[in-house]
Image (tube, rainbow, N blue to C red; front, top):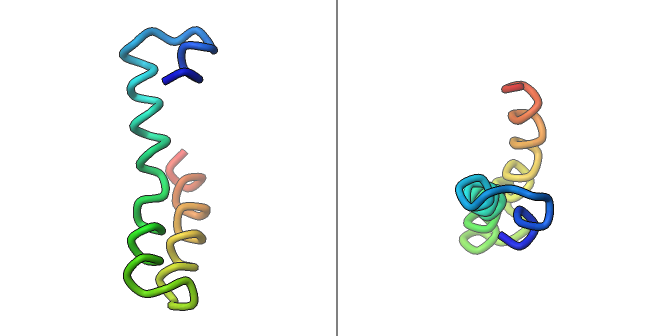
Amino acid sequence: MALGRTIGLDHARSTTLTFTAAGNNVELAVAIATFGASFGQAPAGVVGPLIEVPALR
């Protein structure tokens, strides 16, 4: 939230920024915690968002 306030966002927008940033790597964290970094889901958790996010814009 400090970053949001630093760049001049109000509380609602700063909260949205915080939750979005916190949720970006949830899938990767779960894949690594469950299967380890060498399992196929961990790289998919990294590559998937790199393809998905630009495609949605």
